[in-house]
Amino acid sequence: MAGSSCRNGAGLLSKSGFGRGSGLSDPKLKRLGLHDLHTALGGKMVPFAGYEMPVQYPAGVMKEHLHTRSAAGLFDVSHMGQVILRPKTGMAALALAFEAMMPVDVAGLAQGRQRYGLFTNDAGGILDDLMFANRGDHFFVVVNAACKEADVAHMQAHLGAVADVQYVENRALLALQGPKAGDVLARLIPETATMRFMDVARPVWNGVELWISRSGYTGEDGFEISLPDPEAEPFAKALLAEPEVLPIGLGARDSLRLEAGLCLYGHDIDTTTSPVEAALTWATQKSRRTGGARQGGFPGAARILTELASGPTRQRVGLRPETRAPMREGTELFTQSGDPVGSVTSGGFSPSVEAPVAMGYVLRSNAAIGTVLMGEVRGKRLPVTVCELPFHPTSYKR
Amino acid sequence: MKYTEDHEWLRVEGDLIVVGITEHAATQLGDVVFVELPETETMVASGDEVVVIESVKAASDILAPVDGEIVEVNAKLVDAPGLVNDDPLGAAWFFKIKVDDLAVLDQFMDEDEYNDLIG
Figure 1 (cartoon, rainbow over the protein chains, first blue to last red):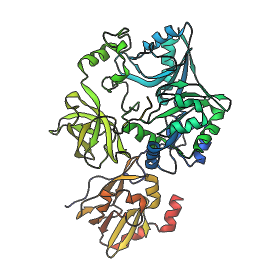
Figure 2: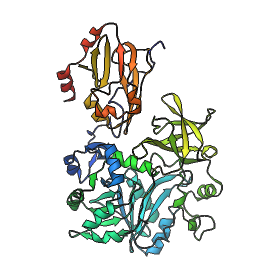
Figure 3: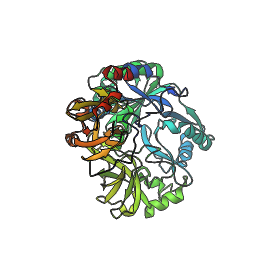
């Protein structure tokens, strides 16, 4: 083979991983309450959603990922938005108004339980995904960091007449995830042992009230724990002192949620994707569907109910590249005869599967499990098979 | 041993230059999960992307440090990309390149100069 390559490269350490290239010098970057703990633990800090966040600790992404799958990992997710919706005229009125923002059953959510929700727009696109909990006399909501200001304004506009929308300042949010998370947390807080998946509770630890849900975003059993900033460091240190627990950065958080088939807002879902296209139909309970007790009445209902009935034109699927080459976000997908059918929205190497995995959107005609497509990686079209999600089985304590 | 600003090490072996990446680069990249090597008997120019290396975090390139011909590649890395993290200065060499004149190495850093760069 003669001649030289026409590609002229950017070099070894110049391309982006998480946050690389944008630097930490941006004065607008906010610091987490646990910043000093992260740096003391050897965390490599990168910019993410307006914060300096630990992307990894000295163990590295691969070990952190596998440790979370085999023992327990502690994540700082304090960048996410915590919001309390306190009713002005009763929980029932608030539940119905909140429900009118989402294709989700809010009114039917029992006290002490949490549920996954989606804010939609009038076109049926997704403004954000969130978790909300019925805490008896109010709702507690957790939203994505990058969307939190818009979400608060959105809730204020839609719920202002029936609720005080209170952004929660000065509380950290930690996630403890993995098969040993239950044992570890029960050692510190025995009453968490009886919580089931998606239960919420407010036990006291060292004199402070913790807001705990048995949930997370890794596919593992685990908890998310909100607590006052001053208590976050002693609590995190108490967890890290348990032999099963390692600190885990954003890098492994991303590979864990990808293996679990969970969407990352701004990548796998956004204002251009509907919940049905995103294969999030499980989030829309029967009561909100056509023929349900409180059918429709949410933004984008016309499109979303139509897609529920007759299927979307494209949908999110799992993808298994057949070679060792990872297919990352933006990889274009084609049929074997060369017709474009979609693209990858999240992709990388799966430490648990020990192979590359991806998710993306393809035309429904090409979305059947087992369909072999071609993904274009650096100019070469490589085979990739449509597969079921998740890539790694979930292990929630139901 | 010589070093490039792109974190490659260059070692002379007979009339060839062996190319790998430094320990610093391997650490920064994180766990390497994929390596794509060039074909042998390929003529390359300095700055060409000749190797694709992917870690759990991102894809990167190794550039040809000099003009020459790729005469041998380390095929072991394709099946065992983790060697790049385990032994970056030894078993995980990437390719051997034949140049007209080994004096081309004079332009690159020695170990002290490289350590200053990454210091």
